[in-house]
Length: 269
Image (cartoon, rainbow, N blue to C red; front, top):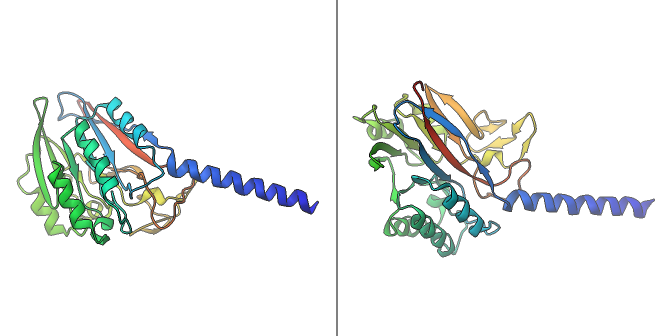
């Protein structure tokens, strides 16, 4: 009887280990679709967030999924490296491959870039390869004749930073706001943005059915804004749960993911 219990326990531990490995390594592709009346043609955006230099990821599969989607814009919503990442070159190599897929690649800084001793070098290297770093700044780009506003907040952005970033923006154009943490736009948004893309929460990393995330940075236990779609002041907020893990390589009911987002044309928002 004792041997049987030990065998069952051993099999359970092996199964749990295998399940966790799948959760932290096998990429799920989220495919949300939104609608907006400001666009005259569909817009495709790939969001890569919270990679944390995850060595478990199949990079070839990741790139193939993005190539297949053929995004107009690629956005990197922070924590692409981890605060403990020592060799940033492998992650920079991946970022370079993303810009090869599409040079319209935009980045906002996360807390782990700020906490890494090579964070400044990582950010400057992104700029050198052509990634647009938006740090309380914005750009208007042309996508097949369509003008798109892309705005980005710093991790420690204040309400004043938000106001200055959005000041005088042409609200008749589709406006995308990038912020690593959703907490800032939740507090600051005045509804000038059509879509806010964030990360930071990892979807809690550990989730339970019907309950959702157990804990999230900046929100504590059982956070309201953990992952997915939320309405904030007549603006849509979408939180991606990310490609990596912090503290421990541990996930539950919450596979690592990227988001291939489609904005369809609509007569109504």
